[in-house]
Length: 135
Image (tube, rainbow, N blue to C red; front, side, top):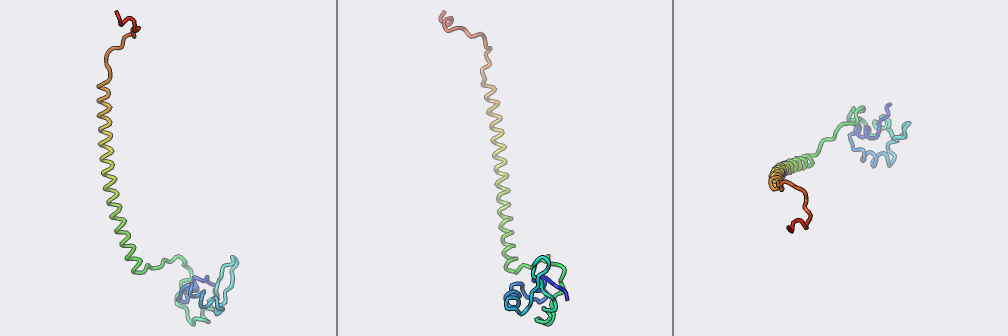
């Protein structure tokens, strides 16, 4: 018959992979072979011998998602709500900081303009020696 991985065998038997290892493989109730990559595989005839009939026919897809438990889903919803609130607070803080930055930039421009007006605008002549200032 067909050789399946331990995970697929557990799905076909309707039990968890850990339970299959602990209760059936480790004591030797189900024999395990190795494929060409040295991964453990189980013949489906072994599963039929031990379990009688197989529950699932999902031999091809190892990428199915496990459904979340209700408690996990509830905690995920609570976490999502908490993160949304934090995001809103941070966005408001970001807007306030941007407004402060714009005010500071405007203030800096005003100060620069005032400094330009305060510059010494007298015509610069030749510098006289100090002793000529006495007469």
